[in-house]
Length: 177
Image 1: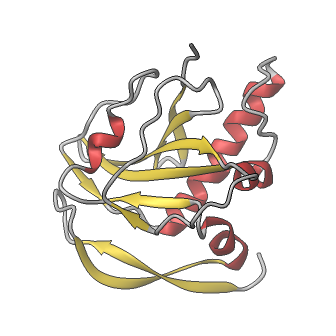
Image 2: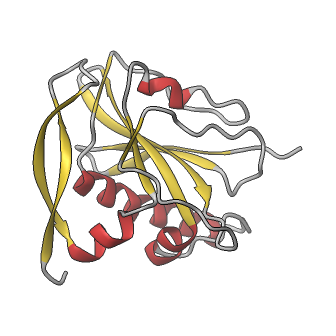
């Protein structure tokens, strides 16, 4: 990894609190920082777990509380998601066409929430393809309105990541009409 940059991220106030707390600097590799800018949104607000209310794919269970995930943990999650998707392709799946982290970061954006379930921390992300042909305003680092997509096929998917185990615990894909 070449150097590191400090990105301002909102620190969670405590277990169960979803409102932004103090701003803290999170050091993540410079290439991760650039890759996350404009394509990652952390869902906050009164009900961030609304992101789990998916209509055409299974989602993990809600937790007892939520937290604001660190950008470094999101970067680590994306590495694990890319590996899981590459294994899926190797097993015969054709979509989504993610063979490595570069493909994931080039072609998909996601909304992220932190979930505390039975004392363990998980990050859930809902991914959708980036429309490279349209002019899209960059996503904010923080949003109160999660994007929900019904149907759309397997290019729309959700993943849950166990922060302590550094492993994907749930991966589900949208259905298609």
